[in-house]
Length: 399
Image (cartoon, rainbow, N blue to C red):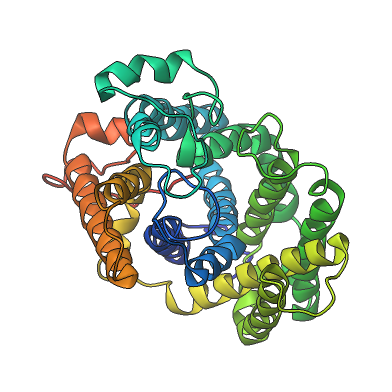
């Protein structure tokens, strides 16, 4: 085990890539469930189910927050291996370019299918369109912005936020490299590391209490202040955690306690979310419970990830290198399949499994093909190891 004070740290940690890969894979289950839950989405099943609402609520607690936390860890480590100018250049290549190309190619079919789909249950945007995709395509760029218009980045909002946050937080990452890397933080007792993890979570809770009541989630970036500060803080927390591996070691040693806390807090939040309590608490209490559940989930996942995902794992290790391409295309394929099967009204569980299975297989196939094409590697923001044979893929991150 590398000492926390070792000059070789932080090296690339496999558990970071593996956790990211797992979350991206699980997004198939999450976005397929959006076909069947009771909230508005781009394509909806004729009948909705509480089980889908529960699944969506569970994923909302940890999935995207974990991706931002891991992105902060990867960005911090990246700055240890390259100059700030190269870091910025790679953010443009690995995040902004795939975002722009995705908005031109991947997102328009989603909006089009929503516009022509039957309004069996409320869609996010009830605007209808009559005509072919080629007739619709020019209106995607002339009508802004979704849901009142057509222009949108849909699920690619994550790339937009990650690009902006990476650039804005780069000075903080560089400062952390100097302050935490050269200091004597590693000499603190284990109890102090656990206390730091708690303090990082309390800061997240404070952000939610101060901002969330006034700024509900929009994923529009410019007015999404609660999400902006929330996710930026998670990236900073990830940078702190990778800068001082004592923190991930503390999460490792206390992973069972954090898991129990995550289970209790998440169950409490779900009980509130689905009206299973006699008296509803105040908004502040609900927000605090939600933020605490999220942080406990994240710390426990870091602990268990470090415990069991720090070695090469068949499929998962190689998938991490193409997870960006998989992420970019997966929701469009789910929407397409949801539209294709819109008249499938019986056997909802089989329908769910069919859409999830097909979208997984198709997304994986596209990602593998993209990794073997120089042009598509650029389009999808993939990093490829050169000189090791056709299709050789280096470990790549979404940060």
